[in-house]
Image (cartoon, rainbow, N blue to C red):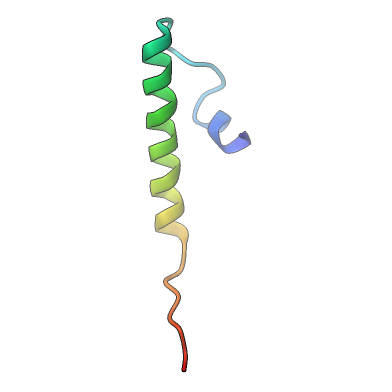
Length: 45
C-alpha cells in the first residue's frame, strides 16, 4: 500500500468509476516496475 501511495497521496478522479480505473492504472505501473526489477531465475539440474 505504501508503494501505491508514492504514486500520489490522493486519487485525482471524483467519479467512482474513474477512481477504479485510476487505481488499476497505478497497479499496472507498479507491476511493470516490479517486473523490470526482478531477476530472471534459471533452474539448475
